[in-house]
Length: 456
Ligand SMILES: Cc1cc2nc3c(=O)[nH]c(=O)nc-3n(C[C@H](O)[C@H](O)[C@H](O)COP(=O)(O)OP(=O)(O)OC[C@H]3O[C@@H](n4cnc5c(N)ncnc54)[C@H](O)[C@@H]3O)c2cc1C
Image (cartoon, rainbow, N blue to C red; front, side, top):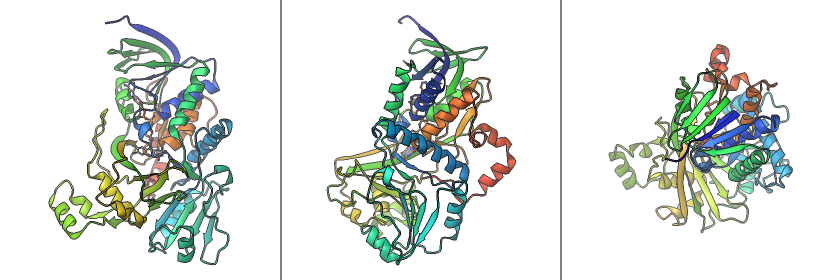
């Protein structure tokens, strides 16, 4: 065994995913003189953060989540501006497609979600409307804000000819798009190190909490002493909490994606991130459906499946890949270093996505060899809101439970975490995004009465 590496710092951040990196970056930004160490058992950005779909939006069923992600988008735009858009921020929006024309619940949800964001107007368009701006540019600087509700079939088919003709209504959320999360993490990491931040590799095994934190990484023979500790361990925030003698109200579901080379050119390169809102019976043949129904593991895929399957081109306007995702799994599991994926997922998500994008049918049973099937954990609270703020142990903080929104929310979460650590002025939503919200009965009742949790 080699000599023990002993190290001490003011603040130790555990976890170098996008969320921990952002916390470390904002800690150094607010207080350059504070010594901050970022520890991870592996490479930075290599666990959940390596599997992000890299999409962002300010569309949420509650105004607090809208304000929080809006703040994060402001910060991503700042980085894009400062780095000549190294992070490939684009903004073609999110298009939500449905075969329904009566959208009372969805419209009330939209209005409520944007009620504290005066710049986000909701505009309605019928066939005659000449004011709808299709997303011809990827450039975030040229894109409109707010939301367009498009009801005319003719206008829909003109603007999105690749969609299935059964679509009756589109909701086009404009402050939404994609970001290169690896570049964003890398940029923040470089800035953190340039500002004097320290990176350490080691797996945290136990933490002594009497007085200062003494963090032991037995296998790596590293010991770190810290005054304050930030738990940004992604799916393992619960494990770190238990090392501190506490627990966190989170669970974990495996969610997957596929990406493949679209040799047939099924998906137009300028198509925005497109979500089929409606539930569906997947397009199996009668024979396939009968076989699935007989198998206890696969029978659910022969039944009605929930909406929110999504598809987008990947790799920019000159690229040739597409990405499909469907976060239908709601079975909680214990996180492992290697999440178990479902071998049938690629064909399931392909057939599901083909309902809105019928050209994808050409890939049934013959997805290109040049493809990736990947996944990770959505670590989430019951209400799908994050946890950013103090833990129930003095000087320990958590920044996590980022479910399917950790890339888009990383910047605002890192900033907010630093404000908690240094006890600085915080945005109005700070308490609501921390463990303190569970003491606010009225807020918790309100959240649980919402029709959606915003899981995509
Ligand atoms: C399939 C999929 C698609 C997604 N799509 C999107 C999307 O389109 N947009 C979006 O905004 N978000 C998306 N997300 C969510 C987003 O990827 C996550 O919320 C985010 O990556 C979480 O980052 P994190 O830093 O909290 O966790 P992680 O990236 O998991 O980082 C945690 C780090 O902690 C380290 N660690 C854990 N325990 C220890 C220990 N004991 N000692 C040392 N180190 C430790 C791990 O090694 C890891 O590197 C998606 C997620 C999945 C799974």
